[in-house]
Image (cartoon, rainbow, N blue to C red):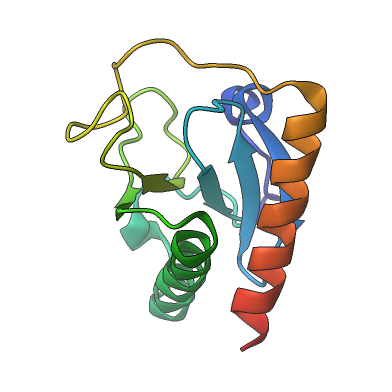
Length: 140
């Protein structure tokens, strides 16, 4: 079986945070929202059903535990967990903390405005926060 390779668009549009038992956690470069992308580190996965059942369960555990930790830390109003894959075929799961006063509320973040780039110091701060949250969420 071929090795896991990250799609170049995911590489470009996000920054590596940490590797969980199944997923690589990447921070979206869009500073408007606390937004991570989970990518199962398995080759050839396009749809969730391409993962064996135990990996499907692990995916949801990693997403929901990290999402819950992000919601508590950022004090969000709603957690969005979604997969589209219309542009990037490689399976990836978006975990986004939303706020009732964010610019896209109550609609989806896709197609609303343009991404705001993180200043370098804030990018590293957010990356470190997500790394801590992921570590504590997956160790429990």
